[in-house]
Length: 457
Image (cartoon, rainbow, N blue to C red; front, side):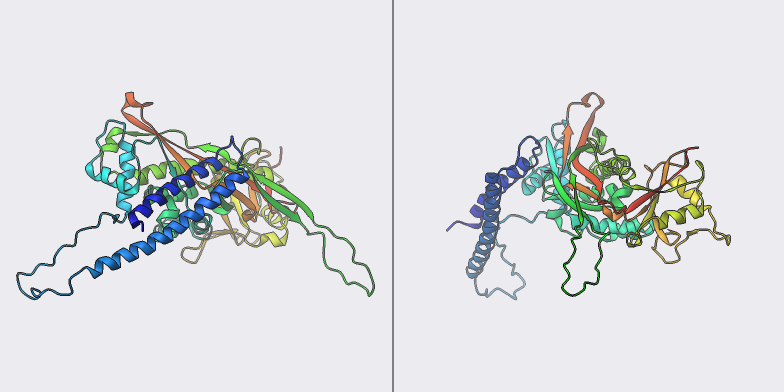
């Protein structure tokens, strides 16, 4: 009968094959075949079966070891008695901790740059299974449910309370799903939080993360013109077909551009490299996605909400907005979509709106009276998006509607590369991240989001 160690070694081989197939599925130059699908099913079943066998075998080995222990010792109770140390079995693997992952990540960042890797870092690499010489790391992001939980905090909390709430909560999905056993959770947490913090559209859109980058067909239906009617006896039912359509989500490649870090910071063990690098990459990826999800053309890039939304109101002025025009924008949306609806606008436009008063001289901008609750405009929450146009002739300055109808598709993996030679003459290391994304409004003709456009003159 194989030992637990031998079973783990066999499972490691199967895990390697799973990763190869996952990389194959993400290869844009090759289609996923039926044989690949069968192989994927087989290796995953084998991996699960081996996991169960390992658990049973480890249990059996622990019981056998316990049976070999002496029942008692006559020296117990004497002052010179010392508990005998049980030798660690060779097939036992120490538990991987967040510190191990942080040390291994730091070793990967320092390797090949001439900086020494400490014994502790080398041992951490061995425990987490990371080769510090490899050119890139695959960062597994949190699943859809976890990122939706984080986005909900941004949607429903006052900006002053968001950071405290995020720090109080865990990533909520466990280490493996958050970033794998290689990537420090601090890196993934910083990356996720900052993508949301610097991506206004990511805070309010519906996010879907997929394991591969294949085209994703999303059906839409418009049945608003049909309703039930009274039917007389022996009368044939009339046809009333809904209007079906679909949105096809691609997986466009997005890059963070280069992040340069000096050798001095890489050498500083007190510098939280994982969290800081995650913060910088998260900010860049968040801003980049927000830009495309707001103004993207849909040609070789995501379709931005400004290009997918419908005209709701044309302002009388090219340089100002009135309170009545905002009310008209609200009521241009079907009442069904005013549930969970919100405004979106640039901070400078928000400033102009905050100065508006109703006919009674009361500001239409409502300050929150409950701790942690967001401020509102005419009772509706709003999102500040710095990629929205400011007030100018013909500009689409204010959006209103149900932003959950905008769907963001992200492939659930970021590839992080370390460039060891490009900035060697500056004594710096270069890091760059790539991820694949798309976004579009799910609109079958029902106009869930509309915009206010300034006059042309």
